[in-house]
Image 1 (cartoon, rainbow over the protein chains, first blue to last red):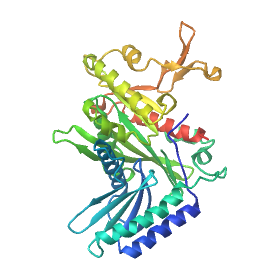
Image 2: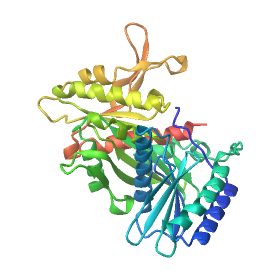
Image 3: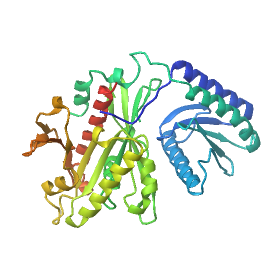
Length: 160
Length: 228
């Protein structure tokens, strides 16, 4: 069966992503960064562990970003590459990464929007480089097909 | 688009409940939410209007068990059924792994069913997804109502079958959810067709809700197992 396209990243990629985001958080004094894929799945969280439901957060962030993407198209823009939501204590800054992912940064009064915005550009560029370089062929033991290969009986048992 | 997280040992998949307005999509999710153990599900999120019509989507994550040490976590979404919300409906289909079409069995709703099914095919095609080759289940809901159309009639309208070209697949196959029905069969014209598995339901009473969820999630996992 054909499915929606899928992608994966290696341990090196994961380490790179964490390093880029940790640096960014330190430079800006932001609280945490969440990387969410465009279909609403949480990919990773760096910094302070969120005290809220991160799954629900990821879904809503992706929906928010997608809705704004369509709003941009309606007014003749190709997209809005960043969004900013201001709260009384906490605010969030949302940015597109390689048209596949969304980076959500949570920050409070310990930093400023200007600094977050300034440093985010560089961080997004670095993340883009990770996600846009051609994917190396994955070893055979990688991904769902290997994980679930021959698992038909297990799947049947799960639903019996 | 399924996401496998090796760190937390989870397989995450996205299932979308599609169909005409007031067909019972949200009711399906509400029943799942009410019936599964609280530690196996997350929050039910509803972006709805004041009169409880879905504005953007409903969302419910549920764990359906463990395979090979990996938790299978399904993210269930509904779309707004009302025709004028097409832009939001299309957004929800992004990255979908499996689709449930919740059809309203009432005779008066046949036009709305057909329109929603056509809209599903169109929106999937715009993303480049071929729904005839994806995990896809039809739920015939509201079977308890006196004005419910016969299943054969609903099948003819919504699930007439698509042509099976591959000779290896041209053999009779029964519907695992309903052994008296054929999923793959040869028509009197000689053409082989394959239909989508279907489940009869009364979602307000919970009948058929879990059968539907099981059917689609099983197809999703099996398609992951066979993908290369």
